[in-house]
Image (tube, rainbow, N blue to C red; front, side, top):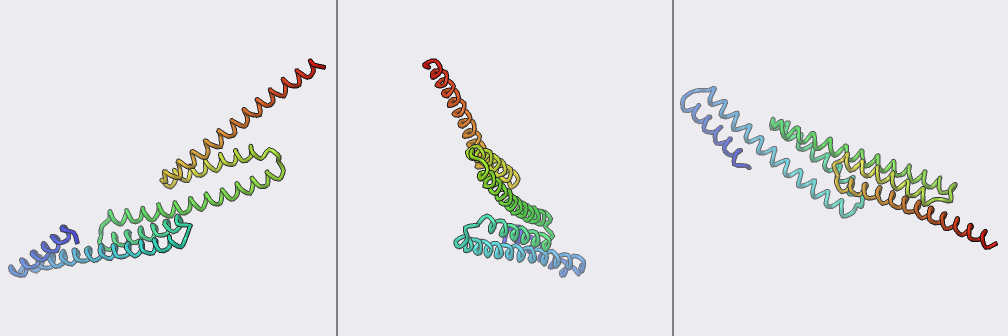
Amino acid sequence: MSLEEKLEQVKGSVKEGLGKLTGDEKTEKEGTAEKVVSKVKEVAKDAKDIVEGAIDGVKNAVKKDDENTDQVDDKVDQVKGSVKEGVGKLTGDEKTEKEGTAEKVIAKVKEVAKDAKDIVEGAIDGVKNAVKKDDENTDQVDDKVDQVKGSIKEGVGKLTGDEKTEKEGTAEKVIAKVKEVARDAKDAVEGAVDGVKNAVKKDEE
């Protein structure tokens, strides 16, 4: 319990006692109400801490058994947000309630964004495989696909506020573009070399 909550309970008790002493029922009832509200807030915050501790325990246990921890994290964050939102409602603490709602929504957006990323990457891989069957120049296709994947990853990172994912996406996009440019330069040089060879062969004949 915080010092502030303890002081609120003491204030309520003093007000209640003063009301009894002076025969002022209104002051006595206000004091009782303040004391009870403060105690409810304390109990709600303790309950929130207990639930969050339990959630962290489950999260850690699941992380040991599950490689797909991002999805677990998102679900746990949604539950934490719901708990915080509920505690805010219970205690009349609008700030805590709004924070809980925001945390819940952010976790859901992250989950949806990751699902969308997985779907898009699956579609890209499907297109990539279909193109590879028809196209001998698969390196260029791979570079373009990797640029798109990098852009998607970068976008998901921006959307979810995940700087690591955003930076990884940017890096993947840039690396794929550099590979594409290097391959184009190599092809241009090889074309020029072939042109010179052909010109020399004609002069020798």
